[in-house]
Image 1 (spheres, rainbow, N blue to C red):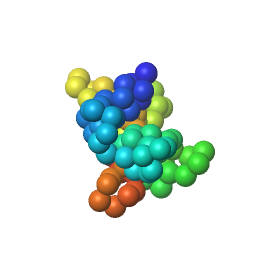
Image 2: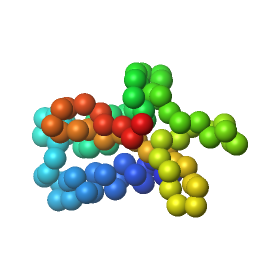
Image 3: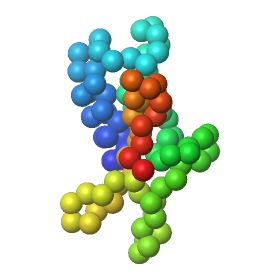
Image 4: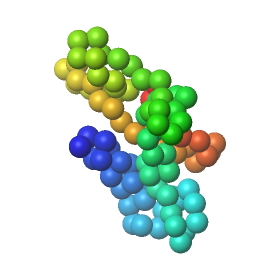
Length: 89
């Protein structure tokens, strides 16, 4: 659920009026988060989410730290200057 919310927020911030940032053709646009599906860390490829941090207590993967020690897995966003997926880790 957090991943979906993060993707929606990224799309809203980079394209609030529906005519802002697009990575591809306007007829088939890719917004900031939808341009990097399944990429959560460096070295990602189809079927592999990338190099992520591992919580020793739960064994869960994450790439972002929140308040009160909370850990989140957030999607990467397209970097318009390099046309690559920018990750947190």
